[in-house]
Image (cartoon, rainbow, N blue to C red; front, side, top):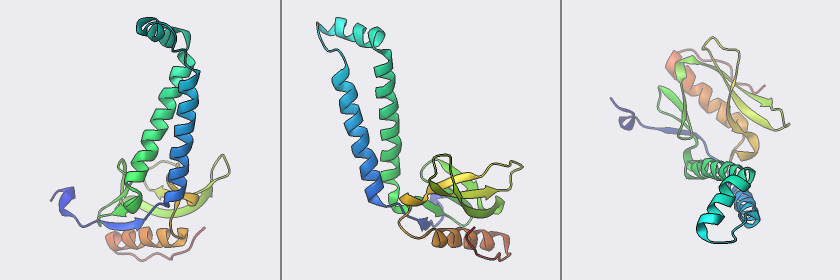
Length: 165
């Protein structure tokens, strides 16, 4: 059985407004950085000036493009950002965890003060994994936690109490 054969169950969707806001911020910042580049002279001189005369601007442009690509990927998966197939929990297009190793889902405040849903995984590490920032969620965090813990209970066969920390 391949991953494409399994039926996906959507646990959480993302709101469109924060994603559009982040894309707009990336577009504005990219425009500002591109306007600050020195485009004078012939194309070869302009290229060498941009590459060696303004490397921080080029690094800034590369960073903004990287963030924009990440946000665009979130936009593409906003309808099924957190999902499971009965065996594995998926976040976006890249992160995945076996449901058998999931121990809990909790709300935690990060370094910047933003609350997020974090996954406690039993893999001999003391680190929790971030699932999604709360301001990005379309529904309440309790529903997401309940959905994940219900899927975990179906895999392990043990019903756990459902509460949000």
